[in-house]
Length: 87
Image 1 (tube, rainbow, N blue to C red):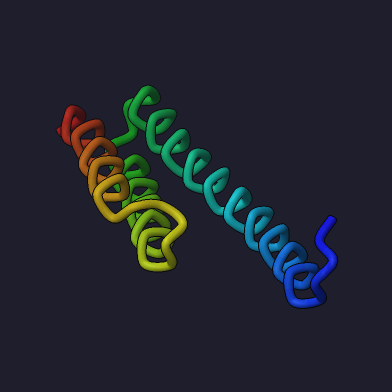
Image 2: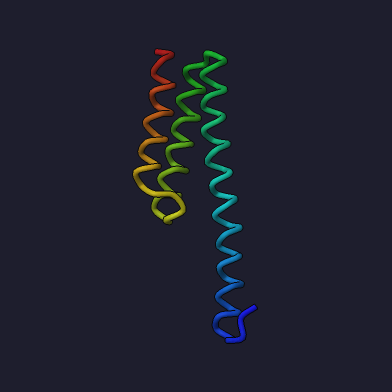
């Protein structure tokens, strides 16, 4: 454990950020999973809606620095490719 007051505070804030980032990353995985499930069900309309929601979440996470912008772009294109297989 740190002795310096500012470092103790930094440890607390880093832990809060870690928990928040973990929750956001988990939400991203769930959103992409919903897209996959909609594609497997064969519902093009629902799949596109889920893809749009997932893309929005990925963009937000990238803008906040939770994931890298290139990773967000790759995941978005992957979702859209899945949806395009239906049409």
